[in-house]
Image (cartoon, rainbow, N blue to C red; front, side, top):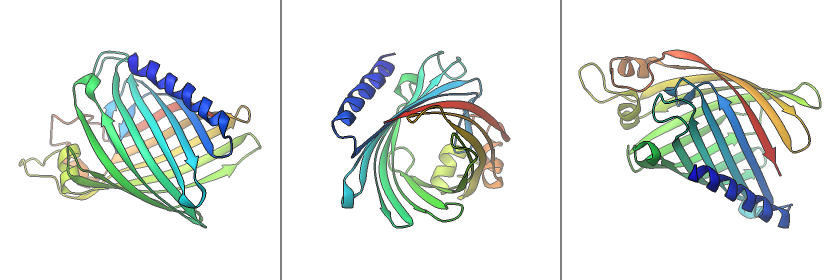
Length: 259
């Protein structure tokens, strides 16, 4: 509850700052309900979660855009912790800059699991995306605290404007993990050997943005996710791994307010 109060206090402060410089500041708040929590193909909760985020960014012109993001996952049942506990709170600081059709970015993420007594970890990342057909992008993450390993996310997507108020978004993601990430998150093989690097997970997604008004958007979504062979052989031989579903759907709905 303390973190939730802090979350909305930060939101109020961010909106106050935004009002002082509407051209440079961009503020958005998200609130969503999902039937599962999936991260990089791994199922952490299958009984329903509330996920929210506050993002504030400042456009510094030729220097690019600098921003900060706070994201949380709140378990709605007691599968992994007490109901209504924050199983995870992530704090991200980032930078991005556009070069015609190319956008590059970098950032730092602090993952806090302290409320469920799982400690924390930190990642840095770099990203690149092209403003061309299918909008291909790549993001490389490096966990330098707990895992000391790399994870790579490859993605494509496209949006179709159906009406002035409705936009259909389609996307696909493919994940790759090195040896250390594979061992940490996808388990060891049946002989207890370290995980091997390889393609670990995929996701196909569809969402429909409904613009309620200029600053408010409601987005129902569905995602089909699964683990690939490089993860399956290791993960499903490890009976202690979190989330043993091979593939499944995730349904949700999100409310976004932007300024």
